[in-house]
Length: 393
Image 1 (cartoon, rainbow, N blue to C red):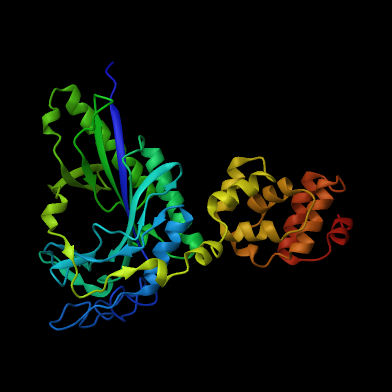
Image 2 (tube, helix red, strand yellow):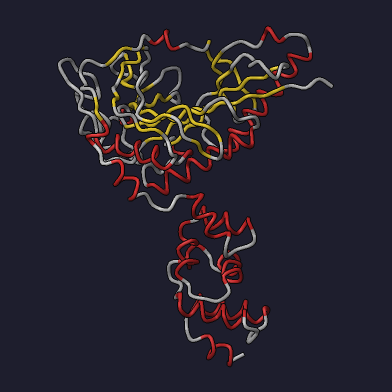
């Protein structure tokens, strides 16, 4: 059977959690349900208005770059990316092309090409019959775009990369990155080749909004391309942008894929050039980074042998904080009871000293595992001294 070689690169957009938009003072509120209330003459591109860059958004992109051991540019600038669409009020998008804020670095052992900053578009709504409405609340929201090198070779690795990036963004506090709200969108570039030394024709799947969809869309595209190869119709694989139909679990053609020269990038004349090394104390910012997800993972592995439990605590901040706050000689046992016996609503109410004492009683053999479940449940529900409660049974 012939061997085929998949290659995947990712473009991931994440809206940044700033108080205001990227180039104006309008509120950045992803939870606003009323259309077109967080808009102003600047983000609506009225004649004579001028943009002013949001320094906090630039700082957040630098934080991500520092966490990934990337290179932070000294010189950077904003460019105009020219294309017309109803959700782009200006007729162009302010983005970055030649001089991104961040370049290089790696995540999950996959190399990163660049991370740049741009403004988000408005939101087109097609649910009103035979016409489209546009909500511009999102237009101008600061949007980080991370681009990987084409070095990923499986759908699962691509989805896991996106999961780890979401976790990093939340850990740093730069974005909530909720896919279901559109705060994070994953766009894989997928190709398949029958020659290990050559890339195949690249297809991009746009705006995937769940990790499961990322995996399914990549798997579908690779299977579609392989079927065309095996039928001798590989010429039908064209460079294009495709969408994902969640109901049919298939991709569909949207438009031919643009190249950079189609957008006619040029430096935005209304925004000043940036000298980032003098504008930010990068050494101090590096020192102020919180513990990063992979550092937490390594630390927990020293106390918990079960890798699935480790991942639960890395992903779930409330459980992680309860684990760290509970004093006990038996960390593995503590981890098991937090996951199996402490419900989400109870985590914040759990008395850590009492909980830790009960764990030690079970771990030291004073209480059987069966009686321990009852003891833990009683403590979580009603509190009280573990020794006294145990004596009542």
